[in-house]
Length: 115
Length: 112
Image (cartoon, rainbow over all chains, first blue to last red; front, top):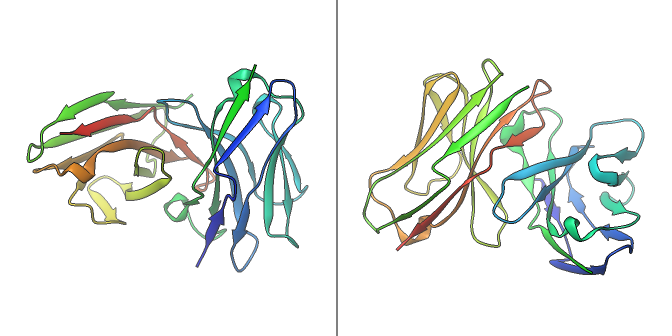
């Protein structure tokens, strides 16, 4: 069975500060990993994805994530946040031998950026 | 570029009334299409997926049904709404890699 754990339900940071959102996964092999962002009353937007290769993945809006096989983690980072980064962030996992019908989401981390 | 459109944007419906939510994707032939449900403040639960016209697989039974009448259209419906159906419904499709989901803007449903 596969699972995704986002241990932080809420994170509050000041504008201009750095941000790290944690994601741990459980899967028997190396999965495909994703980070999505959901702004209020909107659908999910893809921030970045990891399939293979370089463990550091660059995404949109200066986000990046680092895959660690030894730690079973895929943490998301941003060096300097803006108030518009306030949103809910979802980590997701897909087995490498299936299409999107096997995607598993974490519970999400709500980020509040204080001015 | 591909675009995905969901309708309606929001609905307030009475318990026991019927429901139909729609999703249309343009710019992508033969997409895999998905319906997800999100409770307020919650994570996403996959409901249905379809890889071709006329074929729908159910993932979770929530007294809902889905149909794919056209290659670019996916419909979610029920004859009788329950209070527990309230939430945010998201339609999604997979790209050429087959693994990355792209979501629509969602339809918010409040059942009273």
